[in-house]
Length: 437
Ligand code: 4AD
Ligand code: MG
Image (cartoon, rainbow, N blue to C red; front, side, top):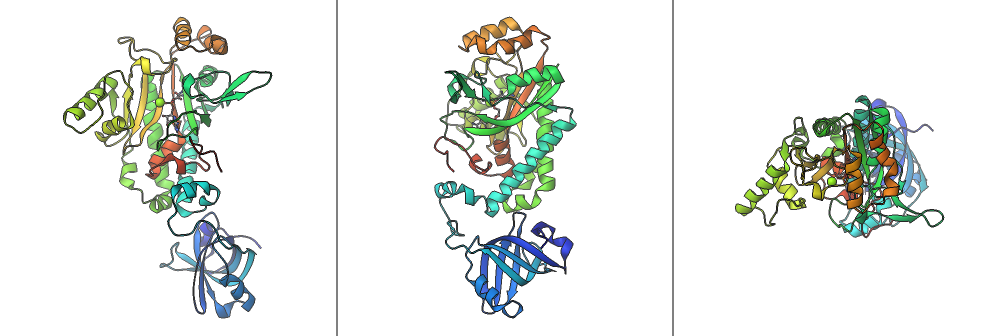
């Protein structure tokens, strides 16, 4: 029988439908049963009257445990008091699999337990809502870049060398004693495709063998990275603010129901509008020093250092929307960054810090164009020259100012959802102590 999805019930009021799903919850009172079914698109309350169904059906339904697979048939009734606005008056039911002892019950479970049962946890309302938001973010990202004239040119995952520093590389055996590394970023390849297409992007999984156990670090995460030829740091900041505000607007427009389940404060998302404040690294450091003097910050920050999570949170609290901190000391940034011409100790890089303590969601900037400078940087960073020869070709043949950024989808999703930890923003998270399921 043709299946009707729960999110389509509005189009079937007073009609007979077939719903194929799983039992979310079951209440019963004497001659009435209220099974709640979920089918991946939503949850609907069904009403079973003992006298409206066959005795075997009544018997079978009564014994069902959570997550039993069931197909029901019945008429859709609009009811304002019902959670989704509709109820189904069941006349027939078929038990596809009766389940007993589903491990995740409505009671509170610890995070470790839930993470161990991630393959089942995904069925719960909150996890479902988060991954729906992620899905919308991915679509928003692609639509934005496609509309802006970027061409999708995905970068390889197996690579011969580091992009973001050698300390966080996952090494894998390639053939004949050769080593390969899981990519940390597609950026170097983007620089090649940007020279071929003008504007290009890659969007795929990236890997960091980081021993960080924080609420924003994964060892495998998805990064979208746009890159533009004939572009500067300012162009990257312009693009970043339009990019993030378009994502927020899309999430607000399409995921109202999910944001409600997540109890997201919508005013925080409505504030993500251009222009974003731009803050020189020097000024950011000045803010931190002020904070220390006032006793609002415990850590002591020295000019030249990288911001820790409390520093980022402190800086972003000063603003009502994301803030773009630019021109970090070159010494703490990657080898490929262009230098500020007036202040060569500074790199033309930018980090976009999200409000509410979410910290860096975007990192990017302008790339160095000079062959000699990059040769020297590769040596100083102890990177294998031979693996970078192809990259240096980009500086030999038509080297122009170019710039781009990377955004981690999970950090963006955690922020949009207003949730504590990135582990809930990807179907199967990979973290320092988590490789399963
Ligand atoms: O700042 P990152 O390391 O920048 C790059 O990799 C550049 N090559 C990107 C570019 O310019 N094309 O990483 C960029 C973003 C961060 O801002 C953050 O959102 C995310 O990637 N990210 C992580 N997300 C989850 N877990 C981690 N361990 C992450 N490391 C970075
Ligand atoms: Mg960064």
